Every structure is written in C-alpha cells, then in structure tokens.
Length: 487
Image 1 (cartoon, helix red, strand yellow):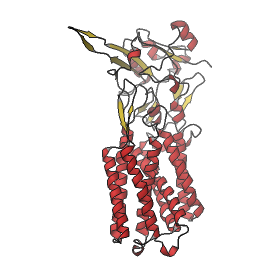
Image 2: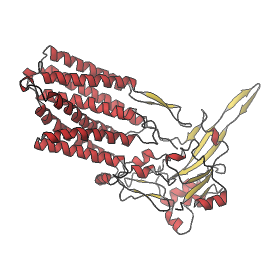
Image 3: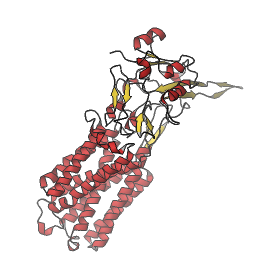
Image 4: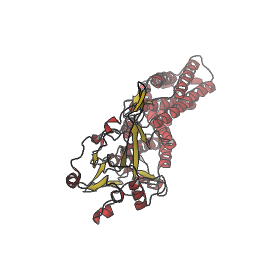
C-alpha cells in the first residue's frame, strides 16, 4: 500500500509559523486550536574559559501535526470508533460519531487531536484530503517559504529529498516504534543535543490533567467493585456460621451490597457523562469493543450494574455471586485504560495495585458501615459477623496505608521535558489514610468493650469518609502527574 507521508527538514525551517497560520486559515480554526504547530527546541549556554566566556547555544524548530501513523494509538483507544484510517494511510476523525471524551488527545504522542469547544468533539489535521484529491499540496506545505515541508508518497519524497533519517524518534520526538508515524525527517545538526539538561521545548508538552468528573467516576465505580469483592468474601466466610450468633447473615450482606453496587455504579456512569463534549452520544462508547479498552471498560461497568441490579430485584444468590468476577473484570478493564504505552507515568505496576487497593478499602469500609447501620444494636458488640467484618477491613486498610506511604516514586522523563515527576499519593492523602486507620482501630476497640451502637456507627462512617477523602486527594495527584511521551 502506498502511504501518504510528510517530509520535514528541521535544518531548513526558520520557525516563521507560516505553516501554522495557513493551517488555521484553511480549516477555520478558532484561537487556541492548532492542527499544526511550530515548536522551538533550544539549549546550551555560556561557560568560562580562563579569562574568556564561550557559548554553545543551539536552537532549532519543529513543525508538528498529526503524522497519520501506521499504528495510530488514537484509533486504538477511541471508544466510539470515530477515528478511521483510509487505504492511503490518512487518519481522520468523524465528527458525527465523536463523543468528545478526549482520550485520543491523552494518548497521542504528537498532541494532534484538539478539542473544539464549539462542536464538543475532537478534531485534527486531515492532510487536506480535498486538496490532495485535486492534485494540490496541503495548505501547510504550500505556505512554507523555505520549502522545509513537503508531502507525498515515500518513494517520491526520497527521490526529491534523499533518504529520510530513520532516527525520527530522537528527542524531543517520541520513539518511532510507539506509533510508526508517516513522517520523513531531515534532522537539525543539534538534534542529538536535545537531551541535555538545560534544553527547553516551547511550547512545552501537556502536563497534568484536571478531570473532576473522572475523579468522581473512578472512585464511585471502584467503590462499587470493592463492595462486590468484599461482599463475596463475607458471604463465603459467614456461610457456615450459626444464624443465632449473627448480626447479619449472607442474605443480609446481599440485601445491603447489591443495591449499593447498583447505585454507586449508576452514579458513576452518570457522572462520567459530564466529561463528554457530546453527552447525548454516550451510548456510542460501546462501538469499538474490538480495539478500545475504554469501550470495554464501559461494557464491563454496565455488566456489573445489570448483574447487581438483577440480584437486587430477584434476590437470587447466584446473581450476587456473579458480581464478584464481574467486579474483578471491571477493575482489570479500568487499569488497561490507563496503562497505555505513551503515558509512562501511568503505565506502571502502581496503577493496577492502587486501583485495586482503592476499591477494596473504600468498598469494604462502605459495606461494613452499611451493614452496621442495618444490624440490631444489641448484637453489635458480640456478633461474629461484626468481628469478621472489622478484621477484614482492618487488614485491608493497614495494607492500603502502607501503599499510601510506600508506593509513591519519582519517574525520570526524557529531556527536554522535566527531569522527573512525582507519581503517587500526596502527603495529605497519606495523612487522611492514617486518620482512617486510627478511626477504624477505635471502632474495633468499641466493638470489644461494647460501646453504644451510635458511637460504633459514627466511627465506621468516619473511617469511610476519611478514606474517600484520601482517595480524592490521591486521584487528583494521579491525574496531575500525567505526562505523555512526545511533543
């Protein structure tokens, strides 16, 4: 297959931004939305040499747009199937199918997809396909006064400009193997210095995300999954107990857990719609199950919701048991959404461990607080079920606090971005987690010395509230740590 490709000569580019202006004019882009942008890479400095000062300053420019990759990660991730790749390799976004979720922008190492606030959908370079089909060059190529840009089929570009440099992934550009871009590059002579300590890329890559709706969505849905998992453990552990010694039996666990799972998940899904540019198209999130883990995450959430809802309505024990594997699969699907190859700060073992710990602790605390709220007050201090519930969540929360204090780490990033970034829990989150542990210990002591049920319930709900506050702090830090590979 012959593949339409860009050629860019970094040694020739003057940084005039004529290509950027032409692209905006050709496509009618508003202020702030760039399908092609010119970035400056600069570095070096002055050093004293005896009585003289010497400098080794360098600067060059990169003109970057969508590179219509052979392995477009935006296409892989799009849940709506709104991104397509034509036979000639050109990658396009169909605005009629796009949800405006922005996931393609998160994962693209070239920052190509741009959100349109007017349309509520994503957009990007189209390679000026209408011009190509009429035999003209793309607007950016036609506008370049120094002919640093060209476009065509690889063989023709090689004939006109010579063989491309296969080290196209040299910093600050991402490694070629991530997406295999349709870009032939003639590098600047100073490109091999782009990894030096004082190198600056302007404008700098995206850093950090402020995603309040997704903070709420991930925490609510993980809590629902945690309730399902902890309920399964309690259900199994209580199965052989004498009902006369139980403040709540397996059936009572299901009567509390199943509606809680359904309500938390329903709230999570409704909250996630606030993240979309076009919420009315939310149903399209299931259209790319073949390739998108985001699509699969939504499906797995719906499966868990339907299973818990059916268990609530019918009271059938088998359906309650099915929520356990459904919850485990949902957590797995969620971790796959975030462990993507272009976002190294998320693509670590921290993500699945942290998400699972969050689910078990917040879900476990919520479940046992709900169960205590329903249990007869007189049976609370001596109940085997209460002791079991306390022991389980105490173990979970101790492990969770250990993760809060020990899981954070610093990750070194490629120049010319940042030297390193902090990934993991914030001090505030760790402190709240410790407070939740102390509160739970007090509740455990209260069960032994027969505190009044109101005090026990207050301690239980207090531990849950502190744990949720810790998770909110941690999840904001998680999104704030976002750094992708690329420009």
